[in-house]
Length: 278
Image 1 (cartoon, rainbow, N blue to C red):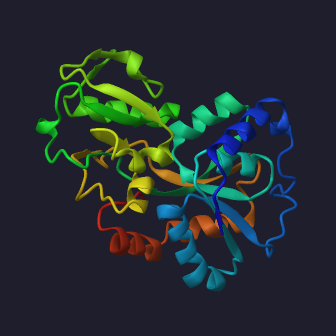
Image 2 (cartoon, helix red, strand yellow):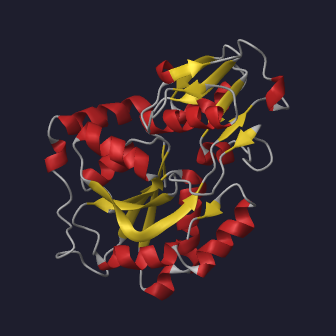
C-alpha cells in the first residue's frame, strides 16, 4: 500500500514528537509480541519496498512470517510511525540520518543487529551536462535538504573536486561550510523526493539512490559522478523502536533481508544501482 502523505504533514508529525509523543511508542515490546501476528514494516518504495515485497511474495511464508509492507514517499513519516507504534519497523534509512533524527525529535529508534541490507550510491545527475568538466561556472546544483544527506551530497562534490569543505566538518555540513568553490556553484536545497523533478529547472542535482531509481536514473549509468561503495557509512538497515529488537518476527525478517536469495534479487534487479551490504 502506498501512502502519498504530503511532506508538510510529515513535518508536522515530526514536530509533534518534540512535544512529547515520543513517550507514546508502541506497546508491542519484545516480551509481549505475538510471534504469529502480522509484522508491518514502513519503507520507501524503491528499492526498499520492492525488496520487502519480494520477501513477502517468495520467502516469508516458508519462514513463518506474515509480512505487510506500507510504503511512504518521504523520510520523516516512516520514523514517526515506528515511534508512535503505527508500524512495527521501518527500512529506508542509514545510520547518520537516524542519529540526526533521534537527536532532533527525541525519538529512540535503533538499528536491528545484523540487518544492514544495501547501499544506494548517491549520484550527481543532469539533463544537459554530459561530463563533470562541462558543468559551467555559476551553475545551480540542487541538494537534499535533510541534514545528513545534504552533508553527504556536499562530500560527494568535494570528493570530485568541485568544492572544498571546512576541515573536520562531519555529517552536518551545509553550504556555509564550503571554503572553496572555483565554479561559483549556487546551491538549491530541496526535499529529497523533489530532486528528480528539479532536473528541468537546475543544471544538476545530487539525488538519493532510491529516488533516482524511481525516476529511471541509474547511479552506475546516468550519474556524472557517484559514491563509491567502499567503506561507505550510508548503508540502509531495518530499524525498530528501542526494546523491540528481539521481537521474533523482527529476527525472522532480519535473516530474510540478509539471505542469499535477497542478495541475488538485488544483484539481478538493480544492476549495480543498488549494492548488497552483507
